[in-house]
Amino acid sequence: MYSIHPYEPFIPQGADKLIIGTTPPYRFCVEPHELYDGDVDFYYGSRSNGFWSLIGEATGETFDHENTEKAIAQRKDFLAKRGMGITDIVGRCIHNNGNSDDGSLKDITPKPIGELLANHPGINTLIYTGRSGGINSVMNLMNRYTADKHRHSKTDLPEEKRVTIGGRDYRVILLYSPSPNALRSVSKETRLEQYKRVFGK
Image (cartoon, rainbow, N blue to C red; front, top):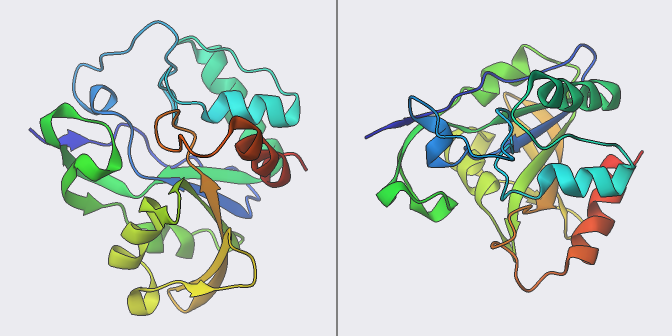
């Protein structure tokens, strides 16, 4: 059974950064959604995903963790104030055996990220979630489906890359995965310091 991505990209006016993930968990991508107490029906809304909790700690912002319109609006307001859009690269896929890890995604149909960027020329920085050790699943998928010449170039900073998409050059930040299971070897403090650098401005 195919999983269909449940959300349209959110791109606030004047955005110059775009957060890109892979896809929500299986239970968010099928109809009807199977949301639990503590979930939010938005990007990184699973109660087991630490993304918004890390951002809250890094910035001092308060986010409700419940499935309400208020909780969604808090996240959209935060992104708009920071000039950040958010989307995922996977438009449709099979979650193998219903698993939610990126390694279980099969038969992927990507979202048209190149077209999205062309329609929002103010964006100059891409923030990829999903960094696990030296591997970034979003970067691998962007190389496969979106990047010109299908590769990212190195920079002097280990958490940054450059990529050309549609003939335009973008700065890329490789964000540590917010999943509590993805980076057991990386402490919460290390992740929090990175989130402060990226989101605390």
